[in-house]
Length: 244
Image (cartoon, rainbow, N blue to C red):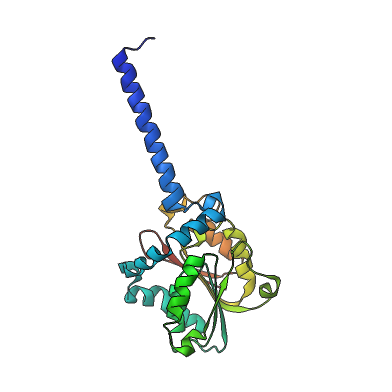
């Protein structure tokens, strides 16, 4: 079978366009969707350090308005802290500390929030924002630099916590399944694990990380979470409230 020059040019154009589309989608998946999290933590860390300043702008989006925060975050946080003193809280992949700062400002919160992240850029902004709080609010927050691949240390794993927060991060963690198992061991009975997940139509973009509803629910139940509620939030996230 022979092709004319015109046909060969058309075939070549189609092939080039196809390759360009595949490459574009691959770059989009690597950079925007998964933030290079499938290619090592150092690349992800570099990106977080580079764009930490831009990260702050997202708090101005409607998904982060006061009404939404009250309904999806503060309400379950208040329930987890109700009638408890000297609470112990962990904020994993805390970033610039949005939720920890929000929690520390609440008069009904009496406890310490241990905040962990591996990005100097994110933590520097967090420290700046923390410094703006009242002294009694600042004292509620302790910031640690740590790669979650190394969390927790031996001393921490045996302690009992009232609340663990992991938002907008689970799908980027290569050890998400193992980390969830550790969190299950760290929490007291009737404690709350507050996390986020991509909607199911996006969850397939994060293979081997249990991000769809069925897999995540099964994983959480295996770790002793008896009540699991999932609520819509933004185009990219749903909020998961898992109670021990």
